[in-house]
Length: 394
Image 1 (cartoon, rainbow, N blue to C red):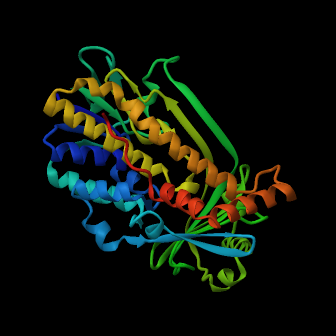
Image 2 (cartoon, rainbow, N blue to C red; image 1 turned 60 degrees about the horizontal axis):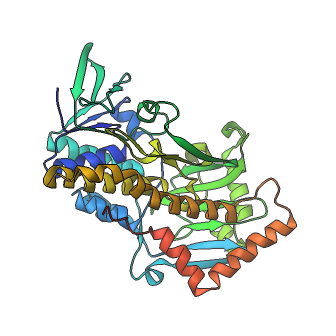
């Protein structure tokens, strides 16, 4: 079996890359270790940057997003008993964000790929990558009891942090940068109306809280908990009471509670590997970097990686610009580190750390007060939140 680009992983980044390549006439095969139902069962982020929204539209998979997604012109910061709204549209010259769940993005991409007839292999747990620096890169795996070899020009590793792609790079090649935060987010999904039309990020002496949503009738709320916390210790009642305690009084009074339909704890960390490529292998998304969810950058960074790799491959196959392949990592990392910085800053400003004393709490409040009280500060937050421009490739 032969293709031009082998894509490892059928999450949103792998499927989006495949869709863009297929639309451009570049043959590709997607290999996923899990089943389609498992992939769709992942509950993930739902804030899409302007750049990712534009990329989904360019890929021709935006019809349902444009119909059902919620365009947000701003968001709020709550701290020191007050609420401050940042008008993203005004501060960035018209840019906004879209509230549309990652699960729905994946579903739309799955439907589009099936309709295109492009090849996707699901439930393939034993994919192995070979000759990444050789003249015949290929992927081997078992399908329906038969051994398969897929020859290709390039391999895109879109299979997440625990996937085979990054693990296929020899030891000593990659440099890892990591910060593990001493807390996690306890998240609850509920069929209740949102407490606010836009997201509210709250800094409180008891810890961080976030009021988010998936639709006008489905909400996603989070509270900061210790890294050792167990989700079994949190009844719905305890969660709602804790959330209310961290919100401004008038917001807490309007909060409508209900039974949770999903509850989980996500640890927070920052992680980057350099370089993001090895021979014919290119790492995309969580395979190369992770951000704490505070800045809503995880899925969006994966989309910018996809955009970079797609634009490079387009020039490789249409113009013979093989020299651009060596620039993939440097181009991606320039934007990644800026997003890592913003996510780290948001996390540092909004969470209660174990060593947060009264002085540190005042410093957080003052930092937030300074930024929202300054036009330059508000613009800095806004331009990072809607997403910095995609880097040029040459």
